[in-house]
Length: 76
Image 1 (cartoon, rainbow, N blue to C red):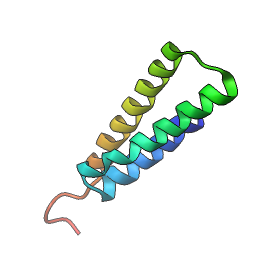
Image 2 (tube, rainbow, N blue to C red):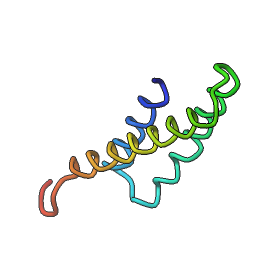
Image 3 (tube, one colour):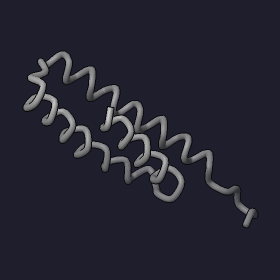
């Protein structure tokens, strides 16, 4: 749950102030969350794949919402 919140916040900030090339930031966050799940909770491979996809999709949707929060050209 913490990983999903972190990806959402990072996605919103990157969408609002960053560029699409900065989406690579999500990969280390997802890898760290999956490694934590494997080490602490002994997740299996299928669970890790589902969790990783969920984290990436959540971050990308937050990025798109952040893009919508950008001001239009000509606005101050």
